[in-house]
Structure formats: C-alpha cells, structure tokens
Image (cartoon, rainbow, N blue to C red):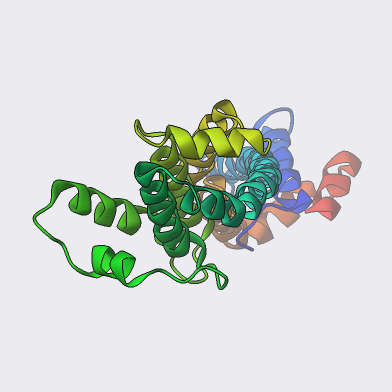
Length: 255
C-alpha cells in the first residue's frame, strides 16, 4: 500500500489510543512505544501529504484551465491579425511610394515565414534575402527577423507564442508605421498589437500546458509504505492488545 487510504489514518489513531489510555494493554501485548510512535508518525505524515497533494492537483488543474482559455483567446486575436495580412500586403505593395512598396515586400516575406500563406509566394528577391546573408545590415536584420518568427510545423504552444510575440514586435518597430496604419484602418490598433505581443509572451512564460506530478505524491507514498512495514511487523501484537475492549476492537476493524 503506497498511498494514503482511510486505513492509514485508522492505524495512526489506533496507535494514539494505545499510546494514551490503553498503554498498559500495549505493553502487556509486547508492544513498545517506538512501535506505536512509528505507526502514528508515518500515518499522519501520509495523511497530510494526501491533503497537500489534493490541493496541489486542484491548483494545477486550475492553472491548466486558465492557460487553455488564454491560449484560445490569444489564438482568436492571432487569427484576426492573420486574416488581415493578405489585404495589408496587397495594399502596401500597390502603393506608388517606393518605401511603402518595400514594406509590402518585407511584410509578405515575414508573413510567408510565419504563416506559410499559400496565396502569397515570396518573390525571387525575397528568397534571396532569406537564403543569403549579405553584408548589408538591413538584409541581415530582415534575415534575423524571418528566423525569429519562422514557424516550426506542429509547433508547441510555447514555440508558437514566442513566434507570435516576435512577429508583433517586428510590426511595431520604427519605420513600419505604414503597416501599423493600414492594420489600424482594418480594426487592429497599435495597442492591439502591443497587447497581443505581451499576452503571447506571458502565455509562453507559463510553460507547457501539461499536468505536473504533485510534489506531495512521493512523500505520501514513502510514508504509507513505511507505515505498512511497521504494521506487518507488529500486527499480531496489536490484535492481542485490542481484544476485549470495544472501542479498540472497533478501531481495529477500520484498520
């Protein structure tokens, strides 16, 4: 028996009874104080660990639920951003101003790396930026941004949130104001992008949404196992000690 059960507590309570008002019967049966102290100590330790374990598991489940809800909520906002990007890229790419068109090209490449849009194919120039690290500081910066937001297939939540944070941060950097302006016209303000980046980082910091083993589990198992060993050693003497006393026999039946 490597976990707490009601019998674990009953055995501790029986030991307490034999240490107290019925100590003489315990001594007459051959029991010593150390036997009963061990039975009581291990039993109470397992009982406390079981309660703590239940509290920990409840907290873990609550945290998992909150992370799941946050993940779903952030995912909905991520989808809203994703939905708007093809139109934003098209609008910037069609602009008459060369610097604005360049931003459209940049966003198309960044979006392709992050979301793998089927409807957006990176241009030869874009591929060259991704595949070749040129001495140009601007090209190096673009390559680094592409790497930082590139999505791994079937990425876990932590990886995906890190990528989303990096993507939003890239959009908000100085010089990208035309992108932010067009997104704002389509209902995503700069504050929305900042909040999305911050929330994505927060969710990533919470870690993977998996059940952790409760810390008290090993303590409970060790204490219950130790009590069981003591119980087997002194069981026959305990049986003799309780005979003829109704309250002791009643507690024995619970053990």
